[in-house]
Length: 323
Image (cartoon, rainbow, N blue to C red; front, side, top):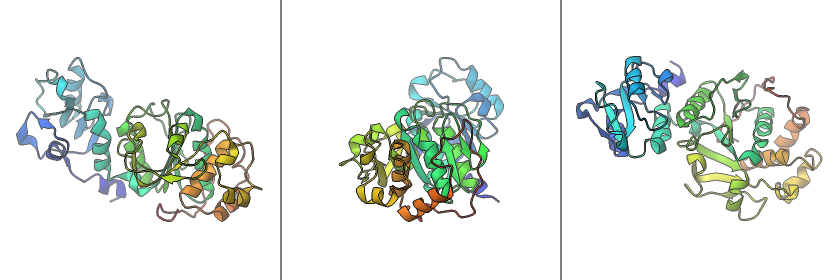
């Protein structure tokens, strides 16, 4: 049995949702009903799904379609109690379904973001950092997953996704990345790629972007965030999360010591390159490793062609705790 199959048997039940999130089920006897997946779109519903509409419904036709497709239960906001009362399957009412959906999906998938190093580039200003960082991590020997509306992939495999992604979509991709052996995920966190709460349930290790600049006590000096200090897209920040400056002044991105060690391989005018390197340094990667990776990978400092992501993958990989 593969890892994805293993983590899918964590028994997400109606009873668990009711106890953990203060929900109410219209059929209390169904507390032991177990879900095998979560769907936010009717076309994604399969046998055993929990169906939670992506937005409040004014009609109940999609609910009946989900029931016919094999959904075991429906998740609705309490203000939607008038919708779908004639369903034969259980309805779970909650005040804040959309805020908690990522946490529920993360539980079902086995917290996949904890099994990888997760890097998030917040805002369109930092969007160019994400593909560069994914290429740098690849050059360092890490199997990488990139989430970006222009070019999402897991290692060599491009992903066909419907953007912007919601929390269930993100958790599903994270679980696939873990299953396929990725040790790092890079997320281009902007409105084109992610919906409002898409990173709920995702633990971020290193982040950058103008929206996190105010969290830096001194530009160029990564600092540790406190839990939920700045919940961008609902992302989970713990005591080890590091915030890296994305600055207009290139000298503010790398600290002086790192700059002196990498000056001959880091282009002065390329702020995204310098930011990507700063994020790698914040994850514990050494300047010596970065110097060697950039020297070996001649295409890292070049602009990638549109849609280009396929590269020869080195055999060496790094676990989250090691890098």
